[in-house]
Image (cartoon, rainbow, N blue to C red; front, side, top):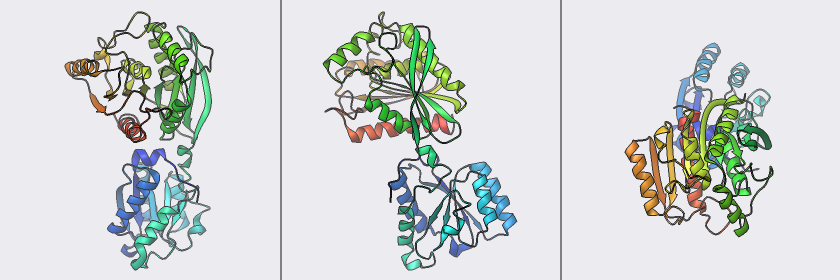
Length: 401
């Protein structure tokens, strides 16, 4: 069976189960818990089964009426039933963008032509002595067409770019987005000093796969030809650090505004905006958070905030921190020489002074622990950090504010 990868809407919402039928045809609490555990492991959902709605045995018209009301309210979920559920209800489920159908049946293929997807038990649900195994088997036999109405959310388009006008010249912006139709929140993603490298592209793909339009600007567009990627070596580091203090502060801020405006104007964007950045990108994300339409910002070991040394003339990032109105998350490595203890304490004191809406996290890691190339990469902490960022974006951009 082909592997099942992360699906954005599962990660964001968790499953909502709609159970039609009499008691014997519904999953029991123990079975639901087991099913939720397997789904959580297979689809990397933090919430798994969020809610289970038993609807009992009703006339077809009542079932469709209840289903319509619930689907309109939830817009995501899984319908559980047996072969006796009529095709009218399945068709209604598909029209209402139901995520999938879980059919308690030995032969669920009869409905595959009309439902969003079918997940079947491979032996009779009434064989209760083996029902837990049945649930596990069902969960582990998810096919690629399972939940076909949302499977495209986990498929991304990654070879797109746009050329935006900025006050300091044209800027290439790389776009990663879900392939599925619909509208998604936008995330401005800032790179390290090396621009759009392989690790940056993989991170962007991961974020986009959770249901976001990710826009990555080439931060040194004034100095390098479009598409330039600096190497993870001494020459690349020297060049990136030199350009960091050659570019003007207004240039950095103008770039941010151009990308945010582009995201808001896209027909596939909801208009809800977040920012994420790594290394120098963490600092640039901090500054982009000062725009009032940014609702959530994740900064990973942002350099030079404590020194005020960004750009040719320095920066006023700490002085302007009061302009940050959205939620802010700051993540640091304690063994990062670029932002030592006294620097982190200076930044934290300023955020506390302003009583901003922020969270602060320090971990035992070096600089660049997110980058999946090189000796400083920490896979466990990287996974944790990405999870924290996605949780922030989910709360602030995808489902609320």
